[in-house]
Length: 366
Image (cartoon, rainbow, N blue to C red; front, side, top):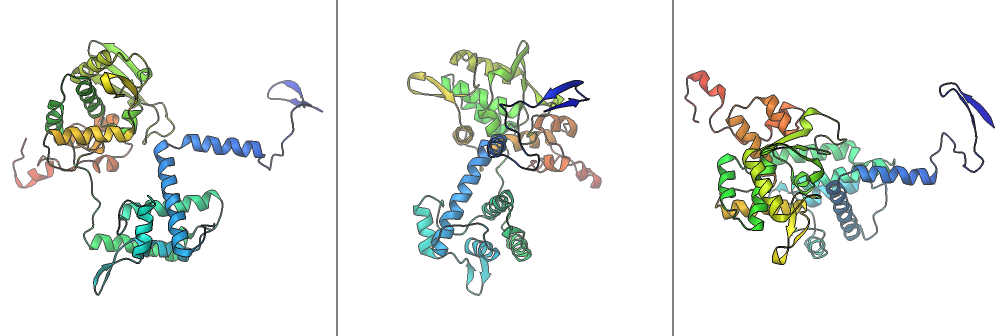
């Protein structure tokens, strides 16, 4: 069989050794390829969080209903999940419905961190994963049921009225960062941690996954103590769209710290920040969890008061930029934010330097 392709300007023939497909159907091989692409497109952190959530759903359902979880899940089960895990106000105080033996069994099985009610953010994530699971299988979605949606909305409102506000990590602003840097010695770990903190903070407050995934391929020398680091996939740029703000400057103190670490660790290719084993052996790339632990450890060693984690680098950069009146456009170019609202959400107060304070003639602090 032959046909003429006017666009290609050529006569094409059907190949005998290549099976023909039906336009309205997805072959089993093609379906597997689609799944693989979808899976590859998801971040490792997202995939891991989905797996954790689904394991919990399966464990909770088995213990609560005495059978394996099957889809579609009825809306009543989603409602039961909410009241089992979230406290409500009763005549005798706060109470939730998860029986103590089941609660203990979930903890013992490693599916739950501790006895007691679930954080609202965790519950919302668990329901979101259940919702996506049903959407992916094109099944009735219990989370879209009006009663489930209303119950979740009222649960959020009850938490707010109760004063159970979302807890945010403290910002590691410039003064705190300097204190954390002062704890870094001249040994390999000290050089690495100093370079890591300065790189992550000064390039706009990089997320822990971005720091763990930083690679020599994207680091380009520009001049003395001056580099350009090209960001790839990130939370605010999932498809690695080419943008001018993808290129982050690494200059001055941050560049000097990075050079010192790379030279001491003899790193010329591969991950920027590595594990350090016994005898100073340089190992594989740090994990995102290790980046978090380094930030927490350095803040603790510096005696900083507050709840610090890897996210403190990002909120610290934004907070410091607000304090020093850096134009929002410049700050957003560094952080990668696409909206002012999202950016301001990272600011942890401005140290009294709100322009609005001047409306009543109030002086502002530096």
